[in-house]
Each structure stands twice: as C-alpha cells, then as structure tokens.
Amino acid sequence: MTRLIAVDWDQSSRTSPANPSLDRLTSFVAIAVLLASSVATVSEQSTVDGETGEAQRTAAEKLASVLPAKETMVGAYMGAPHTYPSAVRFEKEGAYDFTIDPVHWKAQPFKSPVYYGARVVRWFTGGRTGMMVDFIHSKAIADLKKEAAFSGTLDGKPLPPRAKISEIVKKLEFSHGHNLLTLNGLLRLPNIGARLSPYVGAGAGVLLPHTEVKLTNGDSRTYEYNYAGPAGQALIGLEFRLSRMSVFLEYKFTYAQYEAPLSQMNGSWLFLDIWRQFQRWMNGEEPPGGHVSTRLSSHQLVGGLAVRFAAP
Image (cartoon, rainbow, N blue to C red; front, side, top):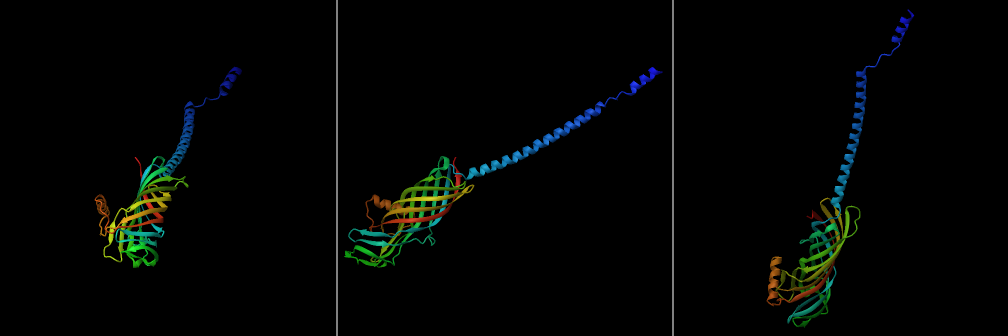
C-alpha cells in the first residue's frame, strides 16, 4: 500500500511539458515584430537621408547655375552719358580753317534716337577672364546757343574772337549717333556672395558716327555715317546672376578721337555709307567739305540684361 502511494505521488508531482507549437509561434511573432520595427526605422532614416540629399543636390545645382563659369552672354543696355566740352576744328583747303573752343555737348539719351548698347561676351574656363564686343549708340549734339572763342579764317576772312556758335555753324552733331564699336578684355573680381560678381575691363575700337554738319555760309550739308577715327573705353561693373540671366550695372569712361570727313552728301545705311567712304579713300579723293575734328571724352552709366549660354 505504501509503495503504491509513493509511486502515485511521484507521477502527480511531475510538470507537464510546454506546447512546442505555441513556443515556436510566439518566437516567430516576436522576431517578426522586431524585424518590422527595424525595417520601419531603416526606411524612415533612408527617407530622411534621401530628402536631405535631394535638398543638398538641388541647392548645389542652384549654386552652380549662378557662379561664374565658362559661358557666352548676349546682352543689351540703356544708360546716360556726360560728355566734356571740347575744341572743334573745321578745315578745308582754300575755304576755311578755324577752331571753336569750347563746344558744349548735349546727350539727350531718352529722346529719340535713344541711348542704347549691345554686347556679346565670352567668358573662358573658370569664368574669371573674358572678351567682349561692345557697341555703344550714344549722342553728342553741340549746344549752338552758347558763345565760344573763335580762331582762324572762313572764306579768307578772320572770324570774330568771340561769337555765338550758331552765327557760324548751323548744324553740328553726331546724333544717329556717337557710335563706338570696341573689343574689350574683361576680368572678374572676387564674388560678393554667390550672385554678385564685380568685374573690370578695357578695350579699343573704332568710331562709326552719323555726322551731321552744316555751316551758315553754304547750302551743302553732310548727313551720313562714316569712319571717323579710333575709340577706347575703360569700365567697371557689377553683375547680379540669376539662373539663366544676368542683370548688370556699369560705369564706362569712353574716349573718341574724331576726324570725320565732310562729304556734303545725304547718306543712307551704315554699311553703304562706310563703303562709299572707303571707295573715295581708295581713289585718293578728298572729302568735298574737308574735315571736322574733335576729341570727345564721356562718363557713361548704363544698366542692362544679358542671357547666358553654357559653353560647349
């Protein structure tokens, strides 16, 4: 009896083994939750990193688009000049040789034909040095109402030492216009921030004015384009760079040494008038009205817009 009781006690005191299927299911669920949590965390971090990387790339692209680079620019501008007074000499062999000093020049930049300019710029590798072809259409109109000193002769007679210019000269202007065509070298200075780019430049070229001259003692007038001599300029500017365009503000100092032929003809188009002048020069013909000569030095303040094209 005692032995049977002992045996029954031992069997009743054993712990029933756990369900292996339930253990495996619980473990699987725990692992799945852990993996899901890890994947979500990694995914979220990747999204943040991706957004940050995209933003960085966009910012870098925008910055690259406004920094100086190897490129071509085509631009146009308007402005206002101030031209210093100068002495003007008229000479024609056997007819006259006299000087007016000083002649004051008016610009009238916003009265037709208006002041304007056009340019083509090529910046080289790195965008720090470049070349520019620059055309300026300015005006220089003599103020004939002012008095000036006269010296020399007209029709063999000495001129009065002082008189109103209009008493001797009926027309004296370069109003279609005081045109300068120059080739310039450019140098960019260190940037002011990402978008502001200062620069300097200088160059030389030719004068292609529309000369309009008539004396009070004759009926003939000169009214045509011509080549009149050399020209030069120095400049300093500030460029504000947008993604594909640039706005610029610029100061120029221009110098023009005139010796304009007086053909006593009414001209037409620039290239036709220049061609006629070249033919006269090749044939050794002197201008019928002689020459008018002066020196025009001008301060010019201009502002404009340019389109940029990436260089190949």
